[in-house]
Amino acid sequence: MQKTTSDRSQLPTMGEGRAALLARVHAALGRDKTQAPSEPAPVVDESIARLASSDADLPALFTERAQSVGMKVHRVSLEQVVPRLRELLGQLEARRIGVAAGSVGERLELELDAALQADGVKQIDWQAREGVSAQYDLDVGITDVHAAIAETGTLVCCSGSRSSRGLSLVPPVHIALVRVSDILPDMIDYWARLKGMPNTELPSSQAFITGPSKTADIEGELVTGVHGPGAVHILLIDG
Image (cartoon, rainbow, N blue to C red):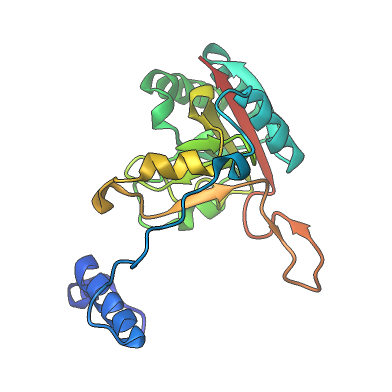
C-alpha cells in the first residue's frame, strides 16, 4: 500500500534507518559493529594514476574531453552568459525551463529572470513542489556545477537546498554553467576536496555527467536521450 503524507510519522527517521541498515550489514558479516581496516589503504602512485595535472591548460583539456563525449561547449565571459543563454533557449524553442545556478551569482540570476520574462519563457519554481515530477514537463534544465573534471570532461552536480537533484537529469536538455575556477584536473582532486567533510555536510546525491544520457538496454543498440538529457550544453565562463 502506498504511504500517504499522514503515514510519515510512522516511518523511521534518517538516523534510525541508517542504524537498521548497518545492523543488517553487520549481521551478514558476522560482526556487531563497524571495524576499521587492519591495514592502511595503499599509497597512490600519482605518476601512474594521474593523467592530468594542475600545470596543464585545464579549460582547454576539459573542453576537448567534453566535446569528445558529445557535449557542446560554449566559451563565454561572465557578461556574455545571459545573452548566450537567451540565444540557446531560442534555438531550442524552449518555453518551460528550471534554473538552479545560485553559485554563479545572484546578479546573474536576476538578469536571467528579467530576460526570460521578456522572452516569454516560463520558469518553474522547482523548490515549490516535492519530488521531480514537475520537471518532466520542462524543455530545459539550467544548473551550475560543484566541479568539472578536466581529465574526462565530466560535470559534477550535487543535490542541496539550492541545487535540484533532477534539473541535470530529467529535462531533455541540460545547460550547465561551468566557471573556469570549477575545473579540477581529475577525480583524485575532487575526492580530496571532500575528505574530512562531516557527513552532515555531504550532499545526499552526486551526479557525475560525462556526455548526454545513453542506454543500450534493448538488444544492445545504443540510444541517446531515453532516460535523461539527450543534449548537454556547457557555458564555460571565464573570470
